[in-house]
Length: 362
Ligand code: AMP
Image (cartoon, rainbow, N blue to C red; front, side, top):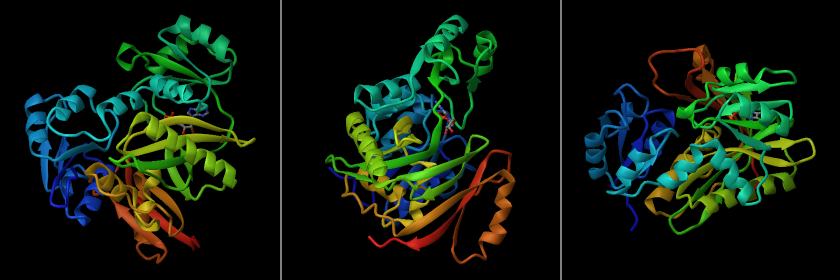
């Protein structure tokens, strides 16, 4: 049964991805009920209704679940127990089982490999001795990451020849709480790309064009639409993303981050079953945005057309860069999006600007 316009979408998490989902939902006549910590968060500011509580507050979770028609989430580390609790009352899309794979770097890479999809070589490590053995097997250079809770490069340690495994282990912050660590071979990539795929309740899929992601200080700086890669590589990347989306049984969105090497090999780095920073461009430059696509998918409506209307470059405004809004507001090719965050902090995503380029002839 579709959740028709007029229904209420529950969004777990109050960040900008939730804000932009709620805006798209409002355009289609839905209400959004946001579950987050504070009324000041970007999505809470514009929600129809909010529940301000911790994710382990069972009474609040039950009351939230009883007041929505479908739930989705806008950040990855919502406890699985919370999602499962909501799923007893109302559909959670993508499902808690999908989230459990995406929250765990070992599980997501293993899942890709089981589908015959390439990743960097990797080994699970639970202590300094195992790390020393894994470095022997995987070789250097390599990267040690926490299995859980890593984002924007946090909890990552570069491993080179002669790196002391004891120091590297303690620097990574890996612990039983993070389900240990994962050592990955370092990929000498030419560029980083992502593909966002939507999958609806009837199994239809629609993929956005592969885009290039450029990082600064481990934070996404710019997304270039489309990625400058050969058609065959773009096709391979789309195919990988669709296979992962179908294999996981996602209803909603799956963003797949990939490395492209100099010889055109495509390796999966990680998946995110939610709207993704690298899809912001689609608000201004696609026939259907990733946010509208998410709403359509989780509500059981037909998917929209993901074709881009024009080329685009999305620039994140991180920390003090938010001051660039003054210039962007005077630039006719720039679409400015500010997230309503009251406090500017280094490394904090405050807004973004999408500049539209050449019209796409397709
Ligand atoms: P992640 O948290 O896995 O998305 O990693 C953050 C960033 O670190 C990526 O976007 C890459 O730029 C870099 N990185 C992560 N893993 C690797 C790897 N195995 N080889 C090379 N660079 C990596």
